[in-house]
Length: 115
Image (cartoon, rainbow, N blue to C red):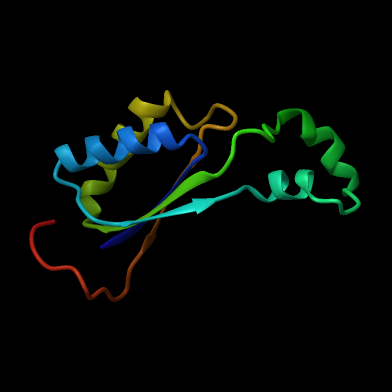
């Protein structure tokens, strides 16, 4: 089992990803609102670190909250999930498109059924 962690700043794209995953037989997970750390610093009244001014041009302060998906799945489903994310986002190598990662689960309990 793997824990898939997916962060997508565009909630409409996350909706499409979830539908396509369900169609592919990947079900379940928890969806949370999230914000990037640099975005929060950019909106705060705090003194910004020197590196921030060079990164500020890449931030989209009006984009609102992104979505974070946590989903436990069989290792064999990871490739399908990644293909769906790449298809919907156009590829995560582009700036501000998202982050996809997995972590191995040593123990898992709480979901029953297929998958």
